[in-house]
Image (tube, rainbow, N blue to C red; front, side):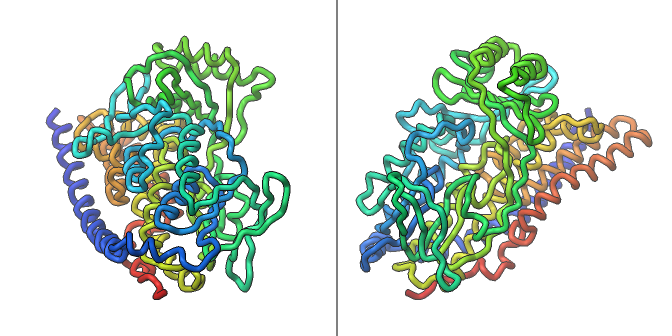
Length: 520
């Protein structure tokens, strides 16, 4: 017992030191944010001066979560926006259904919080973790926020349609159904897009700035970034009807074999289940192989309270699948164009962070564009917007890194060291206090501090080593402890490298961090 308290004190000391370093970095970021906010003062006056020269200011490709939110906030600023979406009917997806509290705060900043109303959205207050018959609840630290601030889960299509309605209500935003086939480039700069209307007519849309938000299947990203798409697993989606989750208003994560199973409410009568299947190939639905897999391999690992509804959902037959993609942001700064949303950056959807990153990116971009009266100097604008890639890093890199690392830690493995890490993570979160509040703050987007993430990740590893060595160490346990630290490093450091060490931890050393708005 004394050893446990002593070890807890050591871990707390490590956290304190690293968090102090993180706070200093945060202060530097606040200075840059304050500069952007100062430039944005007098916004009403700015709005009245933006639309002065006819035509379109911004073309937005895609009216999903990112495209709709971006078009709306730019339209509210008085900019003339032409947003082109391939299909304006209600989407039917099995992801993009959980918005973290940090994402909800960004939704408020964008004036879109009413989009989660009237769609039977459910409040999400945290997560429940299940492993080998044990469970623990980890709640979001929301004490300092208004009572309405929480996560939200919903039908993705209903949420997007509400956002599109808001966009279409603005007189200076033109929402059109059409398929963008290519970017229009002249002298190394993007001038607009070539697209086909719903009727099949081929048209061109010109604007000084084109923002591509056409999702994970983007056919335009190759000319604007270096896409390195990885598909570590696939989700198998089901909807459970009229069942009660063990913990109301919480997402449920089952640390199953071979990989996690998720449950969360998407309406007052429906619960989404996502079964992760490692690799790029899933059992065949048509041949019945999938049904057999779900009933024989997955169902026995589902909490008893949900098993009956889980089997009923399988028998109903509405089984959906989709690949889980991850792609680090690797932009090619291009005059006249910018990538956003899943077209730009993706992470494993286990942690439900995609919409939070996208909405945070839009807030950053909006603050950068706010002081600009016009966008016609493509070269100067491109150079100025390079700061976007650094300013977005605290939120994006924290959520991206955590998603990739947690997926690897939560997945079963034949390697004893990986299983020790998995067990240590579950027990660490079960300790409560700073041990659960810290990680859940990172996951929720409420505390976007990369150093805090690294501190907690290695605190889990050290906690795992301590469990092995106490009360009596042995050579075998000591060797496993060494391998555990090495294994933890092997999980997180490649993800950090892909995110960019300098931008992630030392953004103030990046010259673009200090870019001033171009003189109009």
